[in-house]
Figure 1 (cartoon, one colour):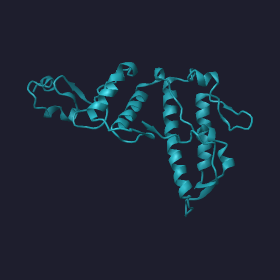
Figure 2: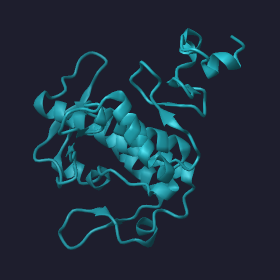
Figure 3: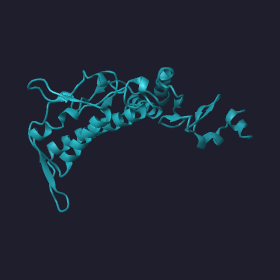
Figure 4: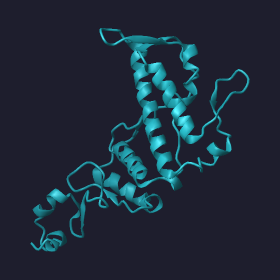
Length: 231
């Protein structure tokens, strides 16, 4: 695997960048919202940059005072925001935003960045706290990577797996991660994960995972799915 680190090993901006007006305010509001929801606290040692206190009991114990659903949604949204902002900063640093009629710009200086840079880190949710939706999201991410497609800054550094191989890997670990029995698999002939829980595929003892739209097209003798439908 190859991983992009985004802002992880940076301490701030090296020089001012020109961005769309309102960007700085939006970033600060997002960081403050995440801090408020998760109870994150800022700390600073001597002249080192400000950072979220990783030694705070709330942080170290996995945010026990935050409900699972809120935790997963907040972390999922925040991590996606961090990756998106990194791409935006990369673009604006190479091609500064140009103001035009109805689209004003503003500068973010290194001093401005110190007000929010501590919040440009990805957060972690312990597996024991995963909601069904978060589990599906994490497995879809892994599936994309194993299929040879970059996802969230992660790339596969070897030959991509086939759809069935990637699904098999996920199913190996499902007994330890899929607490709500979402039963993820790849419908025959498709290239994405689906869940039998919400009707994403029908399971056939002869055919395996079958997309609901394809169930009537099975031509195998005594197909269980067709038999259930009285065909």
